[in-house]
Length: 130
Image (cartoon, rainbow, N blue to C red):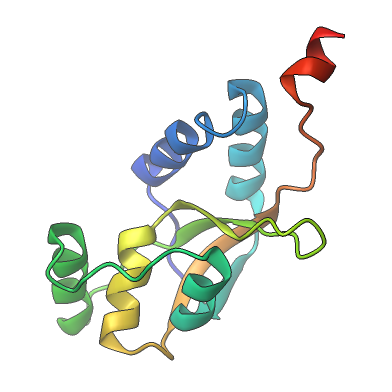
C-alpha cells in the first residue's frame, strides 16, 4: 500500500482546523500518520460520508480518473470514522476528489485509506468558557 503524501496531511490539517481547534486537529493528524492502512469500497466511503458524488468532469476528479485509468496509484485518503449513535457521518479529511474518481472508475473498487476515530470529546465554546 502507498503512503499519504505530506501535502495530504497538510490539507487534512487545514480542513480539520475548520471543525476543531488546531491543537485537536494536530492530534488527529498524528493519529492518522500512525493509523494502519485499510481499504474500503468507494461506494461505501462516499455513502458513509453523506457527501454527493462529484461529476467526472470536475477538474480534480478528471485528473485523478486519468491517473487511475493509466494504472497509476493515487494517494490514500484520510478519514475520521463517523459515529452512528450521534449521527455524525464519516469525515473525509483529505481525498474527496480521489474517492469520487475511484467511484466513477468502478464504484466497487477499493479505496486505500487511513482511518481513525474522532471519538475524543470536543467541548463546546460554552463549556470551555465555564
